[in-house]
Length: 466
Image 1 (cartoon, rainbow, N blue to C red):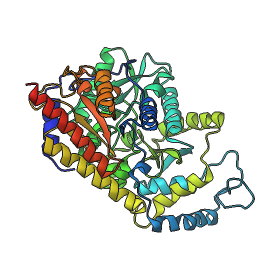
Image 2: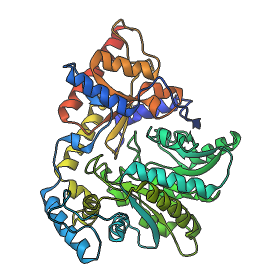
Image 3: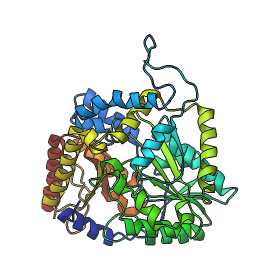
Image 4: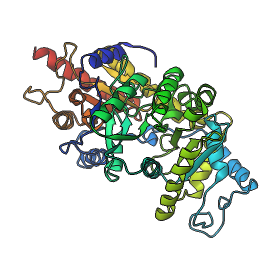
């Protein structure tokens, strides 16, 4: 997205947010609901006949548009290609409940190869495909933890604002989270931010086992240009730190996934020893459905620099056997079809991508008109700053009292307006995150207009309150 009034307002917001401009140890706030809690709350309100605009967490199918009919016609052709290539377990059968033969430990190398090639990987890589995004994240974290060995206070370094789902995954493994400081003119990650986070971790007696930039970000939609990404990886490589790129949203970036996460260009720009520390986590969850998809990882493995890739895959593959988390054949076929479709992933999405892009642009236009800080780019999430132009809090209860904590902001938005959004405190422990709310563009244009009306009402109330 190009620079806009709302983006400039967000830059001003961040410039005055000391907590967001320094590294931050993520400390879960027990007063906040989880994303599943918010989703259930929205469903319960709807069932009770109460007003609700569900902005808590988006499934791409919520956009209400189908995938391209040409892509749907391509899926059986893609399956035929896989069968011809010798992939076991993907040929359709009759008389079985699910239409595919059973296969206890199925992996589909042609599928993973097509996915990696679609991202521009031309050299050697080591990969694994599982039944879901959370499974591959969990398995990868376990591999990274094993690679690090017996270290004091292991941690991972994440974006300034980062998906709250990392919190339970890391907590269960005894890993802490450090958020990088916001850099430049917004909430983006950067090489300088990584350097600051590494220094902070050392001061706190923590040992980073990986840095995980989310490209594009959940919840801000921001990415990272090639030059900055090269510098970012080189900072990590200088201390032998693997870079695990969370690329789940990259197919939704306007420039396309192979440019949002430019692995081909990285292969040309990085020394082999740095390239061998780069891994990517991908899946179809943001393209097809959050419930029906695979989750995959692939680590770049230049000759002589493949030890990290092999070590992580060994642990991850062992965990997959333990949990029997092998990909289902139909979902593996869809993953292959998406990454071999002639027009690319966005063309495969067709009307679904076009509708998403319209709502992203409508969200930005709304915040431009209202002068509210907004960070939105290539995912289907945007983060809005709920504060007045002079820096005051925007959210007030029915008596005009300001909401001061993330929990109060969330509760007030729900009780007064039926707006179920994810509070910024879910994504960062920095104090200023309390004035941020994540909104989803995986909705209709009518919902964007309803949210704009609520924001405008809050602005009017703030002006009257002086």
